[in-house]
Length: 228
Image 1 (cartoon, rainbow, N blue to C red):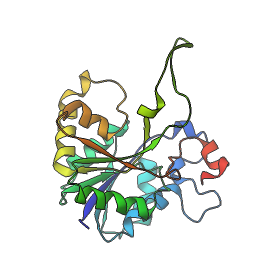
Image 2 (image 1 turned 120 degrees about the horizontal axis):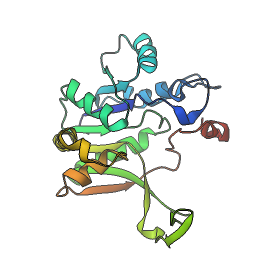
Image 3 (image 1 turned 135 degrees about the horizontal axis):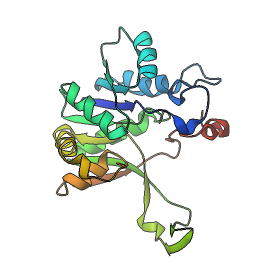
Image 4 (image 1 turned 60 degrees about the vertical axis):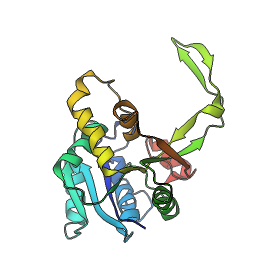
């Protein structure tokens, strides 16, 4: 299996979590905090060459204290939004692998099985971009001003997870274009693959089935309902 680099955006404010702890530093009854659990899935993988983490001051201080001697890990001061955090991670470090993963800091339930399946599938199928997805089982309706506009065909829709896996050069190209044109873009960049859609339309985004357990912690209810 080929070596890869992982970028973990972890600079968010955790406003929606609504708890005294930042969600990435939440531990509850566990032995590890959320961000530690996320990092471990890559730190223990011999094929992970480097872990680049975009952090705010709070998370950065914690990680500096706990991983000061870990040579795989590089901390980069992140920005106010996810895309800008990934951008500065790319700008601040020299990535030496041809594959780069981007994974949410708060998506701490990723298993080694999915991680390895993605890298193996990527190599075997000569992918350029690979994202994990899940089918939608609920009815989805588009709304505007509290009125139903239309019912969507759910068989044509999926939910998208991370990690998202890229040829490093393609990810760098997309973010270079983002850097140059971001003042003209929508205010919300949903994920990294969205930048591929915007700036690299010639690149095929391949999908692989994700894991139901690979949930992202967003609200405190995610913890209370047993996700952590």
